[in-house]
Length: 318
Image (cartoon, rainbow, N blue to C red; front, top):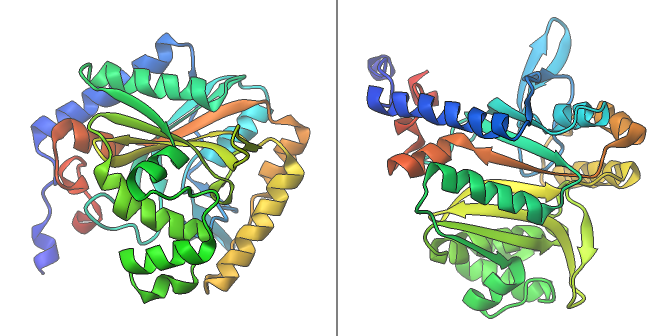
């Protein structure tokens, strides 16, 4: 019965009014730049294969389905169909995402710029944040530089065994056999992220093992990097962007690798999005895209301690 006492919203009415104003400002930002808003499905027969992301399953009549973890796949199908620059501002869902900065249902802003690379898109991310908080400082650094600065380790060249030992110290013995990508993710989130500067910090050139759906390349130091960046606002992860992969064969290979990793980690396979592969085969234009957590952005604007304080009803109130 205690659950029934949480009928009121977590956010105050003043916060909800600010939320409304911020959503309007986000739409105005893209309208001024002639980026078209698109409204894509939340329910699909297929979903993301990433073994670190779990989808919420659903059914439509007798057909298995998934609530979408982001609008990415549908937006890329629109890009392949000739939409040009687009953005989506709406709901996304991820299973078991509960906590101070997480909710299984959340608001995501995602946009794509045709003919741009990740550095041009970082410029626009900075413009967007500064338009909302004019005094925000902006810093850029490579993933290698920030690792070397804080941990004295080059994450691209370090031995896996050394990374696993560091992960065990930072986490637990369970990390002794973890993958390179997961060890790096732990070290960054536990040891580096809390030490980032105030303001907006844009970290780019992630290791190739963390490419997700980004293109890969070799940097001037011979490192195999992914053309990916993340944005952190006051040490809170806010945005994740890519110079988008357009090679359909490589995309199919990454889907297969994701399924292999899901099996190794004891997770059930999911239905990969073959419609996305068909769209890429037809021709996904060269583009850069980024997703931003709007609720986390509002937490920073409000100085809130919990995501519950910036949305009408978090999962705990549903």
